[in-house]
Length: 108
View (cartoon, rainbow, N blue to C red):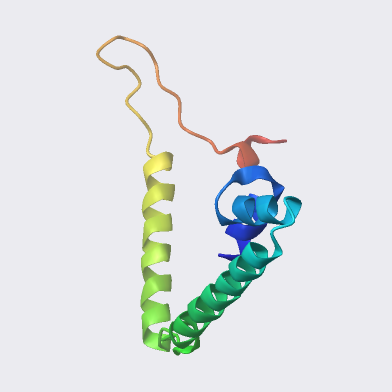
């Protein structure tokens, strides 16, 4: 709501645009009402969203982290071995294949 008001004042439309127009046309009664509505709305949104933001975040336990690390290692080994497999010397098209060598190992 705060951002929408600010963006509207600088030209994006919405509640900020109506606020800006009432300020420019010297309708201070309308301006005061709009400011009060914006402040009340922002306060209500902040109060309603405070409880979910303060809720404790459940952190993973050590066994969960170790299990995840084990799965990552297994995936890494699988990907490493999949790239290291030598393709057949000729395919059905007769083209020769070379063994994949990562760029960091091929640098002399």
